[in-house]
Structure formats: structure tokens, C-alpha cells
Image (cartoon, rainbow, N blue to C red; front, side):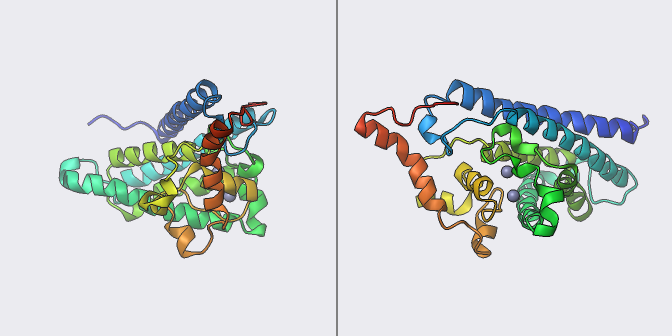
Length: 271
Ligand SMILES: [Zn+2]
Ligand SMILES: [Zn+2]
């Protein structure tokens, strides 16, 4: 049996892999939506202005710092898995495809809870400055803000790796599928453009899933709207901002309004 790579190599590999995934997802959001479709979709820009000077550079640099932390936490978790301390399994046949697919969904739901409660805790005045202020430097985030965390917050976010490994039997490929969902949704939350259909909040979809407007409001207000993928924690805990629905309706209604009055009132200025 070949010797497995050293944990240092594993850490570097996880960091690079996360950097690549982040870069692909944020590039789609930035070059695809902001640059290519930005003018056309301008009415859907939640905050009607572009990013501040130096903002993207800051978001990318902090995101790169975060992937290094993910590498360290990920390698430590893999070290624990090699020692047989985790519930990670390596052969899909051991538990079959039904569990494989279910485990991806389960990890997403567990991560949503982890994110909500740690995020809410990091908004406590005693923790905010050290942990979470870096992420909130962007009040009008771009897709590059997806991993823009202080190293302390990055370590908390990376806590999902050991949490899952130690408690759930999850195959590494199922975890990879979760990570693709995670970065995709994370970029969508920081997209700045509301891309969801107009009626999204009027049916079950809006009762289940969060929108870009939901997280954009969190970055504007610093309180409320703490959840990541799903609505349930903010609903159960009464932490949805009361203006969420009205703001969503306003953003998705702008296009129709400007078409009606035939004005270019919502065209980009400093995008
Ligand atoms: Zn954010
Ligand atoms: Zn926050």
C-alpha cells in the first residue's frame, strides 16, 4: 500500500482546492453577472452602486487567508480520520448510494445550523470585533466576499469539517459535493444582484430558501437575517428583518417600474 501524503501536503492541497473552487464560483458571479450582464440587470442590483475602491482586493486577500485556515483544519481532520477517530468511510459500497445522497443533504442541513448559531454568536459585542468585523467591512458585498473572514472566523467556519467527520458517516466525495453547494450558495448570497424570480417570496421557495437580498440586508444592517441557505432558523428565532419582504419586492419590481415609465432612472452610474 503506498504511503499517504504527509499532512503538510494534505493541508496545501486542501487550501489550493478551496482557492480554485472559490475562484471559479466568484469569477462566474463577478465576470458573468457584474461585468457581462451588469448593465442589463442593473435594476436588480440590491444596492444601486458598485463596490468601493480597494474592496475587491481586500475581499480576495481575506478569502485567500481563509483557504489557508481551511487547509490546516482540513488536514488535522484527515489526520484524525487516518487514526480511525472519525466516522468517515472510504468505500461508497459500504453504505450505498442512497445514504451517499442523503448524507449530502444532511451535511447541508447541519451546516446551515452551524452557520446560523456561530454567526449569531459572532455578532455578540464581545466577539464581533475579533471574529466577524472583517466580513462586515463589505456593506455592499461582491461575490469575492464569499470567504472574506478573519482567521478566527475562518477557523470557526472550518469547524464544519471536524464536526461532520466526528459525528456523521460521510464519504469524502459527499463532502466534496457539499462544498460545491456551499461555495455556490455563498457566492450567490454575496452576489449583489437579486437573480431570483419575482414571485420567489410568494410561494414555498421563499419560505424555504434565502435570497441574495436576504444576505445583502444583513450586510447593510449588521443585525438580523443570520441564516445561510434556509429560512427556518431565522423564522423560528424571529431574527428575519421585518423589511426583508418589502425590500425584495422593491428590488425585483424596479425593472417593471422603469420599463413602465420609460425612464433610465435605474441605469448604472459607478458600477
Ligand atoms: Zn456575508
Ligand atoms: Zn454577520
